Length: 97
Image (cartoon, rainbow, N blue to C red; front, side, top):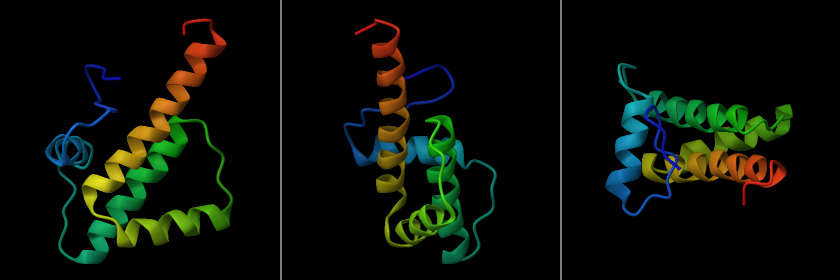
């Protein structure tokens, strides 16, 4: 489910997922591991927002914890799954699939 602006997967390789992560975070400076974890959180929160998921404070905290332990490729795969689930649900509701 790719648009001209975003590749939401499915990702066939880690390189493909990493390329999308890099595209999303392009231009944001990363100086420390904490900066990278912050970007991971940002990507996951953005995906949840795009997917229309309301998050509680507790759920945001959990996403932050997940962001600290995953690599960028895994974060992007999760983000893509969230967004694709929303797209699929919308298409199903509209009678598209």
